[in-house]
Every structure is written in structure tokens, then in C-alpha cells.
Length: 101
Length: 408
Image (cartoon, rainbow over all chains, first blue to last red; front, side, top):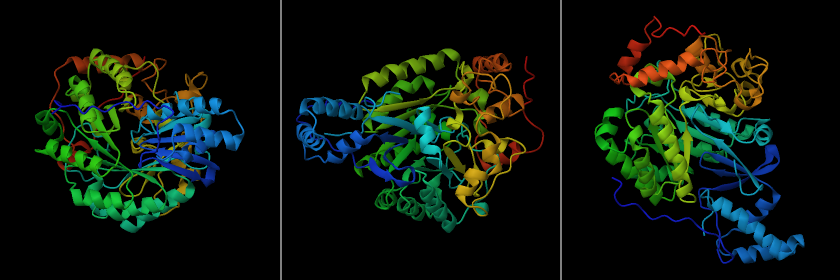
């Protein structure tokens, strides 16, 4: 039953990755508690403001580089710092299966 | 838990009564202040399988006592309004309800993240497709073993394995996330590694290595199910190694058997703290074994609003917080971490739900419980008492089958 194992691979996020949320993940505003939640199979993630800002830009069109540039402009922050932060954040999510690229 | 460099807190909203809602104390607190975040709905106790490890109560609810379609739909909309985020549609076998489609639509309309927990043997592709269209978010399929013959002996359902494999394939084809549930006990614990291979092969996102917890039918069948200490430890070590290897490919959640533990599990993430359970007849329970505790009064969704039951129901307030605790819990440094463990297990083993869960090494009953587990695991497994209406009638006849331990 287990002879041919599918070769699923870990996604390594880099600057050219075009990240998107898999369809089964739901980023939802939770008005009763005044926060955003990310709903996943048997998990509820509570992203902070930065993470929400990043996730909203993960549309499968923009690259990590473009996402970082957009945020750097919006928050007037150095793009290198933001890029590192975004890569870290997305890799953490990818390792949980919550980001595809 | 490690959660993406401080930008996330992750809470686990598992359907296993042992886990409930777990996460960091502060975020659980904040999320559950107004309402639980998870709800387990046991839509029916009917089930085509007869697994002896089932955690349903021995007294199975009759079909004519089951809630109506309208009532379940109302439960879903009330749940959404009060802020519940995830609903587990379970049973018995939830697909035994002909109106599952309408219930799923109601859950979706209420904004709930819905999880279908199914044995999958009676599900066809058209129905699954319809459920997906109506907004079903996630499917969990149980496999009784990876070896078909043994699996079908455990579930007492010939041909089950092929049907489950078919449904698993449809789930991923439809783009739904798939969890494989592996209920682990002495009769399949040698296959934990192969379960992991199976989950990867089927394209599952998640695998639950769910060591059986001894409630309901599983308690009755404990001697036929409990693995040895060494087998248990080996399975845990294997899972930990595989988790590292499969990072980003497969999430493996593990529910460990607490008979061999030193510290109790934070059962339900704390009583009345983040989780509620609704029986087929509409009784609202703080955990799904709560009916084994004598003297608790349970409200019914047919008589009272869900939010009112959560906030003010007697059963929910019986063991909420830490005021109800006796020693050694009361003065324990871990009381806000594990909440004294499981009330139902304290009841089952020590005959007092206020006692420390005997899974805790500080419980005076702990030594006896471990000895009992080791002795049962060392003897040959007795025959299963299958979960079916005939055995239910037999098992619920008066006269307690197992005397409580005396303590030391």
C-alpha cells in the first residue's frame, strides 16, 4: 500500500518565490475579538499586524522581493530589513504547510 | 510552540477530547474570553464501523432522539455569532445524517471553519463534491490500520480500506486539505512508520498519530488496546524523528497515551475554557466524556441558547478555573498549565472527579494506574468488545464492571 511514495518537497522561500495561501487557509477578521485569525485544519493562528500585512500581499503574483518593496514603502522602513523579516515569516509558515509558492 | 518568529501564535483546536484548545496561555485566554474557539458536534451515534477504541459513551443515542436539521443549523449560526471559529462535524459517522449537506451550508454561512471527521466508507464522490461546494473546509479520514486485513478486523467492516483510499484521493483531487487519523493501540502500533508513508503518499497535509485515550468503549476494551511502555516510547521517538524529516511536507500531530505519563495532559485545554461538545440529542458538554461524571447537569440546545450555556451552564462552571481543586493540585505550580488533567479520567480511576488525574505522578493513584497498564499490556489481548447496539445494551446493564482503585 505504501510502495510508491509521492515525492513532496519542502518549499524553500527565496526572493523570487511567489507565495500564496493554499485555498483551505482562511484569513478572517474576527470582529468579536478585534483581531485577524488565520484558520487552518485544526489550527487557529493569530497573526500580528505585520503578518497580516504580509499575508494580504501573498497573492501568487507578487514575488517576495515585490512584497518587501511594497511594505518598505508603506512603513518607510529599510527594504533589506523587511526582506529578511518576510523571508523568515514565510519560511516558518511554509514549514507548517501554510504557504505555497 | 515555535511560531514563525513571533508574528504568530498557533492554537491547536483538535477534535481529540484530550487536546481541546492548546496554545500559549495568554493567547488562549484572549481568544476564549468571550466564547470557545472550537466546537465538536456529534451529529449522530450511528456508525457503519464497530471500532472497540471508540470514545463515544457506552450508551449510544437513538436515532429518534437526534436533533432536527433546523436545530443543527441554528446551532451553527449561534456558534458563528458568539465567535466560535472551528467546528468538527463528527459522530458516530456524520455522513449517516442525510441532511449533512444542509448542516455544512449552515456552518459555512456562519463563517465557521468546518472539519468533517469521517470513516469514509459510505461517502461517494458526488456527495463529497457537493459538500465541498457548500463550503466544507477540511476532511479527516480514519484508517484503522495500514494493513487492510487487520484494519477491517478492527473496524469490523469488510472492504473498508479500498473505500477509504478512494475517498482520500477524491479529497485531494477536489483541493480540500486531508488529514489521516491513525488511532494507535497495541494491535497496530508496529505500523506507525507505515502510517506516515501512507499519509505522504495520499498527499495529506496532516497526520494524527492518536494513541487511544481510555474513555467510553476504549475504557471497556483497554486490555485489548493498551500497548506496552516500550512500544509506546518507540512510537513517540519515531514520530519525533519523522517530523523533522518531513518538515514542510507533512504535519504530524501526536496524542500520547497518558497512562505512562508523568504529568497529566491539559485536558480540553482546561474545562470550559476553549471547547464545547454537542451530543446527537443536543446536550452541551464541556468535553465528550463529561456524562460519565455523576451529578453534573447538562443543558440542551433545544432549551437554552448556546452562549448562555457556555457562560452560565452549571456543567461548564463545575470545574472552570482552579477553585474546585483539591490537593495536590491546589498548591501545585502547574495548576494553570495542566488544570489537574482530566476530570473524567479522575472519575473513572479514582471515583472522584475532583481528584488529581491519576496520570499525574503526584496523584496517590498514579503507581497503581501505571501498574495496571503494564500488567494489561503484558498479558495476551482479550477479544474486542465491538461498539454496536447489542454490546451497548450488554455494557450498560447495571453493576459497574470495574471497581475504582483504592489509592495508596
